[in-house]
Length: 427
Image (tube, rainbow, N blue to C red; front, side, top):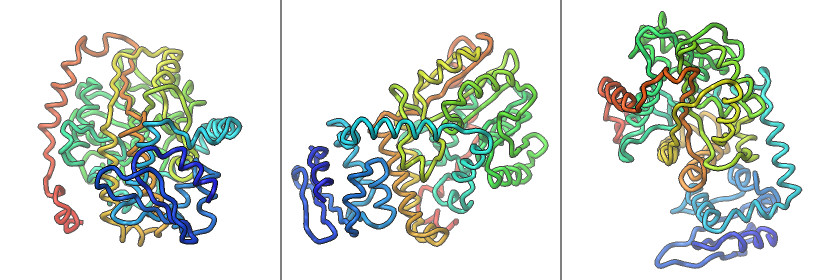
């Protein structure tokens, strides 16, 4: 415990935490501020403290997953992550600094290797992330299974409303005309592709690498009567041929891998018509390039990387793109992740029945950690419009809000889901 004790004394400068080791000995950090209750942590295994201290990138997450680290009520793992994020933000990430230069260099090198995603590995990574039980995603996502940031025009809006507003915002930016051909790269469960086919009478092709996602997309298209307009294919974007008036990629660039950015931008440039528009929505860094933490790469998004704006601009320019619009979406994802976390907790018993308790704790750690990165860290969402010809979109952004308002008015969002009791009864 001595190493973890030393580390916590360096890191914790705000708040109050009490740690009880496996042998019953307690350690106190920080101090009470007013009438606040301490955050109480219990380590249940003699290896827990050493594992957390010696492996800062993965140790705490694994200890929580394995039941070695427990957060005592009334707090939970989300409170613990918020506690450490608060201290890191105020005083610098001393836990990471304590790793030493050699470990940081090694971690960066491993992250770079992990970002190499040839076709076979890309498919395997996609299946790891998205081929989980369908029911899991039904339990914490909105009804349309949008597994990307929702757009909170009002922070009091429901997740369902915020996801409709996201789709409307994205579609409006693309400046689509009826009958156009659209390629949706990384189409997920098909919600955005179906949205475009429905509202624009467009010919849409959605491609992704997870077999169950594509099967579900095809089922949805048939059920919606859009199978003739909206096609879905289990295809790597690098194998797509032809030409399209519009291209969208929502939550896709995070999985491409930095070594493959030149390939991505060159190939999409070939696929887009001369007067076309490409929209990219992705998680991003409001700062310089970095690397994905080891825990997330290992358990949630193997091969994943969240890019800095400078990387997206530099690589796209070299492929011949012109960037006509950039929007930094601040805080929207933190509200999205907070709601995903709430719904996950609400369905704990069913998720543990689908998988097990360790999976449930892993999922909570992932959602809570991601939320705090977007709420208190430097994570944002980037939305960029790429063109070959500057005349492809109007001179002002007025068209975006006008079209977004039209689309929102056309989409009726049910309100029963606002009450958890009604949501559980409906499910």
